[in-house]
Length: 557
Image 1 (cartoon, rainbow, N blue to C red):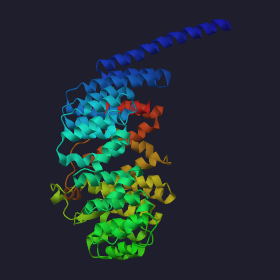
Image 2 (spheres, helix red, strand yellow; image 1 turned 180 degrees about the horizontal axis):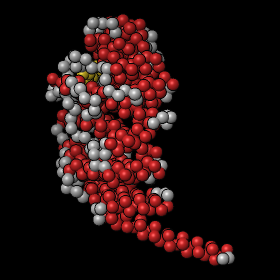
Image 3 (spheres, one colour; image 1 turned 180 degrees about the vertical axis):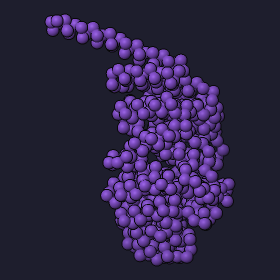
Image 4 (cartoon, rainbow, N blue to C red; image 1 turned 30 degrees about the vertical axis):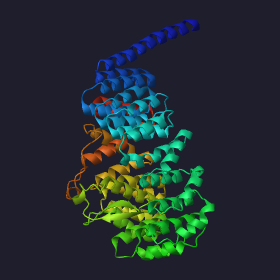
């Protein structure tokens, strides 16, 4: 047979094979449209078996079809998981699906949809935010107003002002932050009016947000207010002069640093310090030694105060000790270690931590509250904030000497402080030193601590360490295929969790670990990870398939 005949035969075979492949892909899309999800994926697998590769365009189309079906469901959990899937995909093609969430009667669905829509860079989002401002729920309108300000929506000022004037005056202090964030000329005019507002709380909030966003164009108006007598406003203005580095106000600040009111004196002294004048640091130190918690917290931002804080951290007063330890951590001084352990690791006192502010809201400190679970229904308590604050302090501890941080991480593992285990392992992973990796490998061997063991395997898999870590994670995920990816149940009270004696993860722990595992697998974006996600969608918990399809779309974009 001549070469030309061979080429013709090969071309004919290729043409026939190409037609067959196209038919398989179309059939898989048809099956997905018919709601036959398992069969659709099985048919798509025929294509990959024949070609040895994935067709990303077909996978994207399959994903969109599934999400469109999910968002049309009347079942609340399916609708929610579809929103997660559309959001996780990060695709502008999923915007119409997320938009359906804005029209849902449940405000939680609306908030979830808004959250993901704000992450998509598309011209259509502006109109969606505009419509969300007509929601029946104030929380949705406020959230939409924030996103409109953040993206500098052309109609933001009118919409935000309209909402502000429709609400009772008690809500007005929430709005200066939105106008300051916008920064347009119209927003600036609105902000100038709020700085002169009859309500002192609105004036204070306006001053603080102008200062925090570095709006030095407001300095002339703020200087005039340094002569006012309202305590909260004086404190806020003193803070603003320091934040905006206004050297013209130094003389006035020095007078305020002699104020009989502690908060004004502290705020003015800190402003002078920011302007390079350390002459009033002894004032702050003296107040700190008198157990003024705002002064103790302020020392964390001032150099050469470590010895004072080291003495305060030995105090028998829990509040003094807590704030001194946090300030020492800010100074990156390892003498904070014992207090840091007291804050991070639970004991019989069941401590929770929440912030409180001075009257002008420029100074803040932390209050430790015992018997937190007994006060869970107290409106002044927020246990979720307490956990967020402890996680923040843990992240800050990475700046301590490595041996000190590793000692802290080891103690968290040893005491089974499960709520901090994921953050601790993420920090060890980021550290990537020989000692940190050794501790992760040690944690991977903890048979009786499944949360530590499983997270350590996941971390070592992400670090591409040699060992059975990838196989372990893949095996673990497939063993959890019946688990629900997103759990909405609240955590049990800590005393019940401490009494748990079996060596299995709680549903909530499994959910978070499963999400992180799937995110890690999807981030690989290779043939193996895509095949794994497809298998999980095909054979796993049907409730998870919408979110997993979003991850698959992200991996194939």
